[in-house]
Amino acid sequence: MKLEQISVFLENRPGGLAEITGALSQAGVNIRALSLADTADFGILRLIVDRNEIAIRVLKESGFTVGLTEMVALEIPDRIGGLWGILTLLEAAGMNVEYMYAFVQKAGENAVILFRFDEPARAAQMLREAGVRVLEGEDVYAM
Image (cartoon, one colour):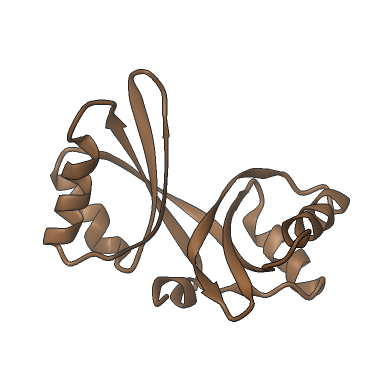
C-alpha cells in the first residue's frame, strides 16, 4: 500500500490549526506525522493520518482545500551520517528530494523520515535495491 500524505491549505490566522486538528479529533482520526510551512497569508499543513478517507471528507466538509500526495517513508540509521548516506544514494541516482520531514517514531535503531520525490515509485525502487528499508503505508499508519 502506498503512503499518502494529506495537504491542507489554511489561512494564517489564530485558531486555524486548532480547527483542523479539532475536526480530525472529533472524527476519530489519529495524526501520525505533520509538517507546517507558512507564508504571510497562508500555510500548508502536511499530515500523515491513520484514516485518510475520513480525514479528507471531514476537512472538505469543514471548508478546507485538501490535496493527496504520495510519500516515501524510509528507515534511516540513527547515527551520525545516516541521512547523508541516503542523500548521497539519491544524488548518485539523479533523484530530487522535493521536501522531507521526520517522523516522531523510531523503528528499532533507525529513525523514520518521510520524503516527497518528484518520482516516488522510482526513488522507492532504487532505494530498495540499495538495501534501504522502504516502509509501506500501513506500516506508517500503524506506528
